[in-house]
Image (cartoon, rainbow, N blue to C red; front, top):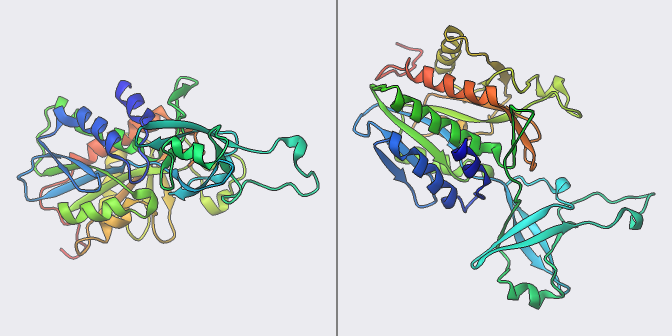
Amino acid sequence: MDFLETYLNNASPTGYEWEGQKIWMDYLKPYVDEFITDTYGTAVGVINPDAKYKVVIEGHADEISWYVNYISDNGLIYVVRNGGSDHQIAPSKVVNIHTKNGIVKGVFGWPAIHTRSKAKEEAPKPNNICIDVGAKDKDEVEKMDIHVGCVITYPDEFHILNKDKFVCRALDNRMGGFMIAEVARLLKENKIELPFGLYITNSVQEEIGLRGAEMISQTIKPNVAIVTDVTHDTTTPMIDQKTQGFVEIGLGPVIAYAPAVQQKLRDLITETAEANKIPFQRAALSRATGTDTDAFAYSNGGVPSALISLPLRYMHTTVEMVHRDDVENVIKMIYETLLKIEEGETFSYFK
């Protein structure tokens, strides 16, 4: 839990993931034989690096954020997304602006309710939300070392609701990095000797198009990939279950059905879960999964890939929520599945 809290509270915006990766690598170091890193910041802990058959378990490290896009003459800062940041939650939020000399605090201001038109009230939009750092003009902002391109994150930190609900920004998807690290820890502590190389992969830049996974898949050239990410709990208000399907936190990991998900690998996961009495849910995805599964599946001439998702409420907000039981069961599901994978398995339909 100490590692989880430290890891989540650290800012790791897309394109600036390295400080979070250092925390993750320090935790993982006793459980792996070596590390691979690339120039953009993806980190991979490797067990059995000399093995020819390679299995990836993967999460992504980055979180959504904002960039400084424009500074007005009166010192207000306008922003542009870095990933899928939700403009509607921005008003009244405190922010951290990352500069070369450290963090500068600011707030997303919003007009008082008394001053807004009741007949035609304007909603928050990317072009009308702005950050106030308490500066009187543009010159004073620039003296704070704030410039176009500075990245902006929310400072909201980890806490627990009702004993078993983890709440924080960026559970999407640093929970994935935590869960795959826990799989590595369990393998080491239980003295499991795998018949293949295991690549515990924490990719960067998922939030802007699966780019980190796209790059590292070419480096590793895996034979199998099991990806973990988050998916929507659909039991909260304003979600249409006929469109989004039914998923609820606390009922188990979600196993995806999608073109990128290799069916034989998925069947191995579901059968393993059933044999070990690990609860799980299912989700059907129309085309792409929207996760790093797609990047691995369609790399290197095709890699058998599967997606195990962690149910989550309030995605891309600062109060993302997951259930402790689901976290533990994702870890168990990946761990038990690894014990069932045989060296050289192709998952081919044409044996």
